[in-house]
Each structure stands twice: as structure tokens, then as C-alpha cells.
Amino acid sequence: MPTWRYSVELDPERTAKASLRDVSMSYKATVETLRLIKGLRLEDAKRVLQEVIEMRRPVPFRRYNGKVAHKRGIQGAGRYPVKVAKNLLRLLENLENNAEFKGLDVSRLWIVHAAAHKGPRIRGYMPRAFGRATPWDDQLVHVEVIAEERGE
Image 1 (tube, rainbow, N blue to C red):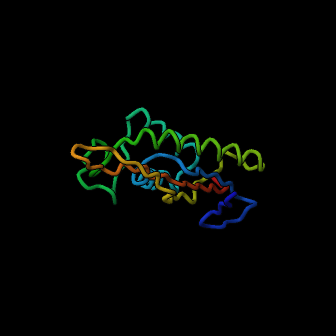
Image 2: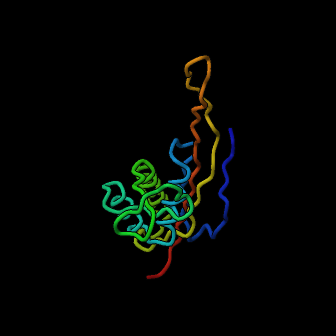
Image 3: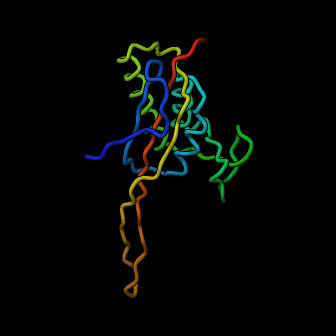
């Protein structure tokens, strides 16, 4: 079995961690969505992700914004990555449960670390006419989130 590690180590007494491994979702949209929720309180981050799922709030695409249209409510390019938001909402609920299990106050949790890493690529090919083939790969993603208990 592989052993998973987090890319940062913080004080284990005041932090709670959660991760997703080998998830089939867009790496680029995951990076942009994590950038949106990093630094927020846990309740606020869950509310933001719920708004993205309901397509009421776009996620600003700052780095991966080639040929991405502008959206109302933000300055510049943005999208509504619903699949990513659903998976990250599940991850934040898992993070909340981990914090409760450790005895941390959930109402005082702030997201201090949120990162996405590329996982393995599942190779596939789509047969085309005249004996050709087009690669049809699926890039898996690893996500890690760490929340810290802070004062109001």
C-alpha cells in the first residue's frame, strides 16, 4: 500500500487534515477553486462551494484562463466547475468531521492550506477513421486541505 503525505506539516494540536486521492476531475479547475476557498472560514468556504454548485457564483480563473469567457460578478475570466465543487464540498465535510473527532471547535476553523497535485494518468484511445487513434486520457487529481483553529 502506498503511504500518503501532506506537502506541509503544521501543529497537529490545532489543525485538522483531509485529502482526496485519485479523483477524476479537472486539475486546472481544482487549482482555481482551491485558490478561491483558501484563507476562508470553514462555513464560508462551504457556502461558497454551494453557490458554485448552484451556478450563482463563478470561480475566477486567474492562471488557467485561456479562451475562458468573462462572467458576471467577477473581474475577468471565470467558470462554474460544478463537479469539482461537489467533490471539494464532500472533502470539507470530511475535514469538519475530522476536526470534531479531534475535539476542535468547528466554528473557529480557518482553511490555511489547500493544494492540488496531479495524480496518475489513465491512458485511453479513441479509434478514428483510416486506422488512426486519438489519445483520450483521464488525469487524476490529489487534493489536500488543512484547517487551523483560530480565535475570532
